[in-house]
Image (tube, rainbow, N blue to C red; front, side):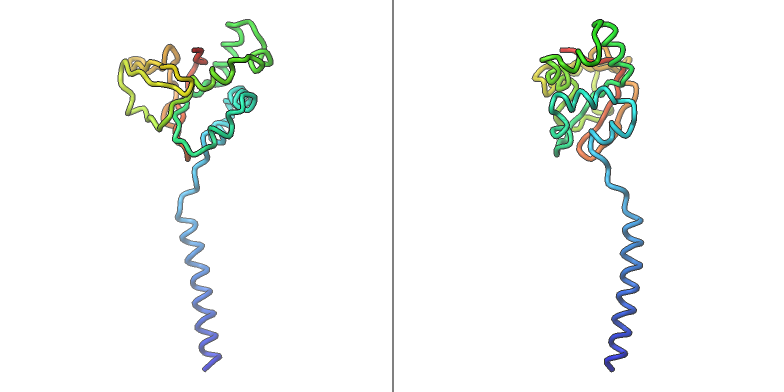
Length: 163
């Protein structure tokens, strides 16, 4: 009787181990947060360095949700050329944190939520203006929208927004 009970228990445990593995495979992978999503994309190295320098990594890894208008490395390169400064000089600016916060909105704002002429308050406590023809935030084109992360959404832009 004990052997039969042990055999049944072993069979149940074996079956449960297979089914729990199958369920784990069916569940989608957990999304990365905004920072990890941007870093993984590979074209936001300057933004990542600036966020680190400004002490905003933990903020954007936080619960959120956040909407980030993320300038690409090319957008930062254009800004550096326009301002005639180096990346090091940009990262040393006293207003770096404020510039970065000007790219972040509290809440998850998907592209379908954007309206022409819409004014959105940023974490820099200043507003940006959305236009829909073409789709822009201030004068920066939104070149890729709705990149979802675990704590918000990223919209890729082709210019750095300066308050």
